[in-house]
Length: 184
Length: 184
Image (cartoon, rainbow over all chains, first blue to last red; front, side):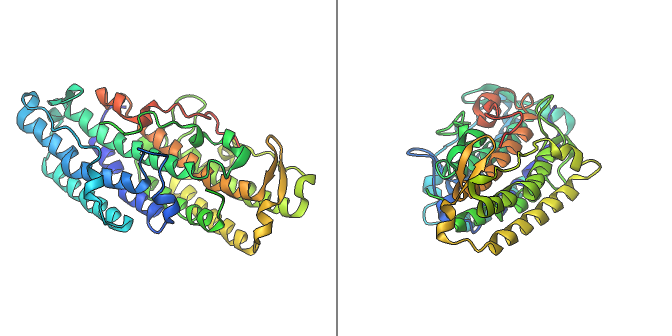
């Protein structure tokens, strides 16, 4: 389907609570474990999502509206959460993500986008020309990429414990496609 | 890591609320869409999870404890939700899943499993000999397989809308591994 702002916002507004319900209070053995050296834990992913709220999606939407293709987006730092999360607990990160997302959605509403705006173009440092509709679609799909990743990271911890069921559980066959690390 | 009942229960107890937060009230364009003919929507997945609570995990744990390897598990009907969900709304299914899972966890506690029980063996109709620990691990990993699947199904609807970001979003490269349909 084509991009629809109502649908995008419906999804974006639900991700923080879904991750919160899954991860808050979950034993560290699930939430701090990763898939091996150089890969992310669920904790890292929440930090990454929060960093994206602050530096990526809305700032890029603004740049499209203000500069069009004349000024490329800032490259996204995919390892920034390692600095920004230091010393923080997972519940703190979940709170920060929920707050940052709520703030992003307020800013999105304040942009008061009109139908013609969605075709406006910007410049991605790696992908070249992109439209505002593509940016907003990617924001929503990016949430799903990381929910997909978190489910995979958690399941990975039981990859041996499931014994012969390993063959039947699709998530255990998932190599991650774009990880490590997730590129944007 | 090895199976740990505390960890398994921590995960199993969180999945219904996580799916509820993601899916309740989400536009049908996300929750009723699938990945093509013969594949499941998020709605179908919630029905499948509910059916599994009633007929699969706890009944199989009981069979291991009562019959060991002398009586194989009943095969699981992977398309049962098509009959059982007819006419139900997604909010109804989410309520049913939450109730069925809560009931399963009550029954699990009532089994009062002791350390030696986890090595007890049963017989899977397709996989052969399995242990109780493997069954319980697979139950938790099965939740993650379907959370992983739902994230993929939802993202799939925006596979064209994201334009050039398609290449960067891992979830859009995921072929599903074991789908359709998810086997157990």
